[in-house]
Image (tube, rainbow over all chains, first blue to last red; front, top):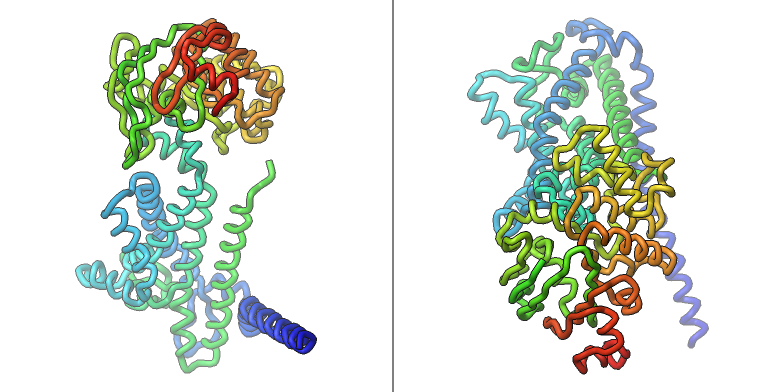
Length: 280
Length: 247
């Protein structure tokens, strides 16, 4: 009995091991597949003029997406300027001072916010800014993206601050340093690299958001014009081009997707290299 | 420093200190000994009110310092005069050796480079670390060995020129050689300030202190000259502890 039982157990083990390996390959392989496919479809349309020219008038071939690249940089940059300080400071509040019901509510709200569909956030920004100003704008798109960033940055900041050993806090307090200075000048810098990495990853995450921009930044086929006018962004341009009936635009959508993907990947890799503990 | 009727405890627990009275003589080394859980760490942490940094911790009674009740002072001001070194070396991980030593001054608003450089050298010399680190002041503090890190922490505490230095089992994470260096430097710095050291190691108390406090279950059992306590203890419980019958 034992022999047969043992053989069966070995077979089941081998089968389950193979299954986990296959699933692991599927998980990691998806990224490679996406990269390869976008590279294959998009590379042919990427050229210097594609990166530096404005879109051609509808019906004419050629043209570029420079307005979308600048637009994305503007909208995502502004979102970071709003979202990162708010997220980091509320993370500091939660980790260092947050006790009791208010802290619980803030933490819970942040977790729920993380799960709110991004198109709903876009609608909210529409109601908050576009509707009163009677105008689609870069600003409203940035606010929508900032709202998505805040809970991500907040929770990340809190996690990294909690990793700072209590003994560091004690050491600073015992030197007769006021609590707020201990927090801002000792604890936050100690967690600094982790906090910055989280902020970068949040930036990369919202750089690819499309839904919140549909009725905020709106899109624009012309050169961008300040923060209070409709503005083109990469994800939104990809969306518009992809659902268009023109073959030329489809190719440009793939090329724009390649640019966006390359940017997100670059930020991700930078952030992770940065977080890796350096040997000093 | 004088302690009068000090009671202290933690959230939801029985009191840890049950009315401690103690006069700490200036410019001496006073050792606090006793078994684990007797309240010796709580006592020393009350002296610069680090005890209150723990949520829910309570302390009442009187701690007389410079003619005033330290429990009614601003803890931030008190801690500048009563420094502390902890059980495990805890240099600031983002700072260099020099920045670690200068941290207390910089964070309290001193930015004059020459003043800081002078304070760094002076403090490192007092902590008997200068010769080992003078060529690498810009290297990270956490790159030093455990014993060096602990002396760095002592230098950091000394840099703000406290009148009292509290040490909470400063050698419990160190080897005998590193421990020996710290004991030597304590004997030097007591010329200029008051030292209170909590220790588990009775030989250490005998080596470095002039006065010893023996604590048991939140009460001070005996307080007197170290050599007297280790040769002719007055209380039976002190004798039992020192001779190793319990604890």
